[in-house]
Length: 81
Image (cartoon, rainbow, N blue to C red; front, side, top):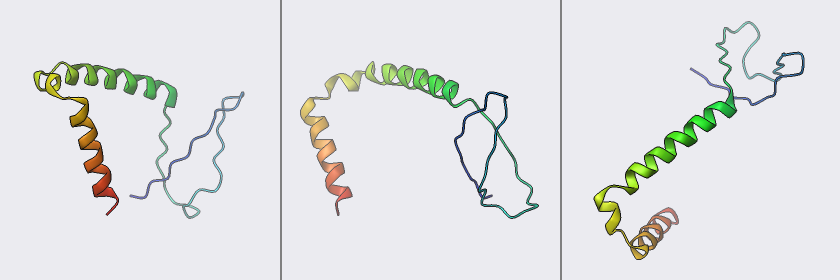
């Protein structure tokens, strides 16, 4: 299934207009409309809860700043190859 994503704003009269779709005329498509602002706030809350849970794990308390710096350096080195 080919997916095409576009972000747009609802007009004052409650309508949307999408131009330049990459599908042939007559193609059957599915349209899903979601409130991006609400989704992001829900995601932010879920991520904050996850981070709090991870930070409370016993093994998270033993990680040092040096460990973090070494992990970042190793990751960056692997990406530059």
